[in-house]
Length: 605
Ligand code: M6R
Image 1 (tube, rainbow, N blue to C red):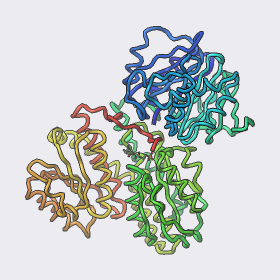
Image 2: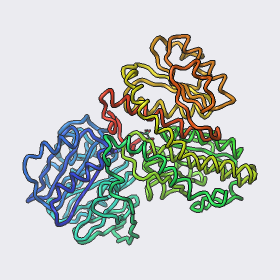
Image 3: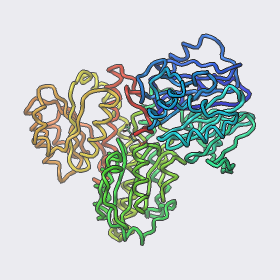
Image 4: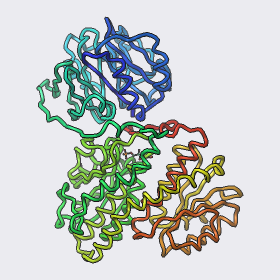
């Protein structure tokens, strides 16, 4: 969850590190720090945001080699002492770490028995001390010894006073890549940190050790055998990781949705068929699929629930949807002809990655839906379908989620057609509607001003229920999460028919209910549910399809989405809820892109 950056080169390291950390702050933002080689290692770190760190730096930090960190606390509360980089007791070693060292208590005891004194509550400090304990002059040898002793997930960047021109780094189950420059090289947790400096990267596999110098990058395995790797080139625009004049990344990313959807959908439609050229799963294999397990966390799990509805409807394959954190430990029943679909924007979520490995352990084919190219989940899957959303920086996902939905539609149509359940005429009609999804989303962006005005009325709302049936319920889950994660308003999504089995007791004068009513066969039932909450004093904002104006008789406000196939409504439905959450959060003075206690990429379990 934390962000790591490192620089070795001819420029001053500190500005490069600070600039990189700015781009990584979405990964964690409760403290930050840098360490630079200057006749000894100079460290400055602080509790708080990167802005606080910049304020704390009172003097020029001169030196061409350094590491930096932005933290999401796991072991020990955010404080100056617990911030990274952490040093060995003698100050010779400095470490930044992303991940969790599971056996840190036993290692700490061992080091204490050797007389080492600790100052922080973190698991990371033991790495600095352990590195120092094993150090006998060679950085790679020492790293091999250290990783032999530590258990858990880690991406590490290490400085040693006696090697002022080098960084040694490693990763296991936490992301880390190497950026390649001319007379300068970098490490970082994610590409946006380095986009300004390079487009060429080495993607590291678990336990590959990197020795970084300004004019060389050597990668070793655990036996110190040098490994040759291909360079991975990205062609992203620098502006992809900039706010481009928007107040927050989240709004930029909401607005980018139509474009991201076009990039994700259109190349996969050819001559009125769905062509998923990049996957090897053949029509014959699809016919044999017995059951699909879709596994994900958070919003990706919500997209998976929409996927269940759409795949079951179009391909008649039973679909189970699991939270990755549950799936990995519940000993799921996985059979030979099952398919596991893993969904993750970042491709690095710890629980989701572990779920993938669990499925593979059982010999199950894994197809993943991922946004970040070359991420761990993408690399470990049998097949990958990329969502071409581009970098998503705001912690609250928007375009990441939307593009996941669109891949669910593509997959459902692909499966349905492989199983010969969709005629070519029907396919033409589905594709016609699918191609309009980006336009439908674009049309809904027009409600921005109206939504902004409406949120003034609801800024102090205490409780919100988002209700729907079928696919609308799945969309409600995501709408509700958007609201709570960025505005801190208590909000719950409910299957509308379930409300009267208990939860309706919470509805009272002033409760806000957002009712989604896009499914025609369930429309009347949803209207009855609206009447029930209205009768108990709720205010109701409804989202319905053009042509269902009768809903205005029961709802206080209605937002209409264009008529489309009912399987695809969740895409447009989400936009008013994203805007509602955004403007409520702005009204309440929340930091929209960096909500409290959260981080973008959850790389610890
Ligand atoms: O990168 P992933 O898609 O695997 O992330 C999964 C969740 O952590 C993520 O969707 C989270 O729920 C978002 N912050 C929601 O906006």
